[in-house]
Structure formats: structure tokens, C-alpha cells
Image (cartoon, rainbow, N blue to C red; front, side, top):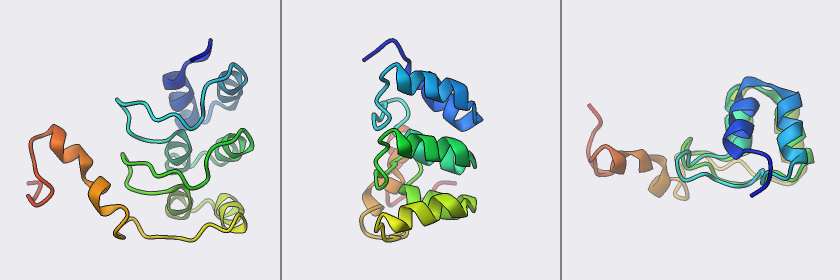
Length: 127
């Protein structure tokens, strides 16, 4: 990969550590990589953690603005809207992204993907 560390990038993005985020991006960590242990995107995680400056930095460094995060069952526009980050939401909308709800048909197969790890099928209720 690089001298940077994707897991550290993910954690720094969620914590709002902009200097560490910039370090890992500068070291060549792939901002669009989805680690098999996480199944989520750095951008959506930062948005849901309400890290507005980090989200803009990730977008400036090539984060895919419409990349689906299976862990969260949503795309960046939905995450920005849910987190109330109006400037990121506006930036994504200006790029021509359209909001598709996390309950739409595209998300249905992935929204509850975690259930397979706990032995539940998608038709079973979590109790």
C-alpha cells in the first residue's frame, strides 16, 4: 500500500485529526479503499462523525463522492444530510449527486450485511 496506514486514516478521520488525515493522504493511502474488516468508507465514517473539515479534505484528495458504505448502508450525500453538514451536502449536490434513500432498492442487499456474521438471514428479525 504505502508508508501510511489505512486504519489510522479511518480512525483519524472519525476523530477529526486533520493533521494525521493529511499525513496519511500525503503518504499515499488510498482514500477509496474499503478494508474487509471495516466494510465502510472513510468519507461516510467522517461524515457520520460530523467531521466537516475532514470530509472536505477527503473530497479534495479524491474520495469518491458517491461510494456506497456497506457498513453504514448509505452514500456520502445521505451521511452528510443525516449529520447535518450543510456545506458538504451542498458540495455533493453541486456535483450532481442525487439522494437515494438508504432504504432504496440499491441498498437493500447490503444494509443488513452484518447479519451474516451473527448468523441471521436478511429475513430474520434482530431481537
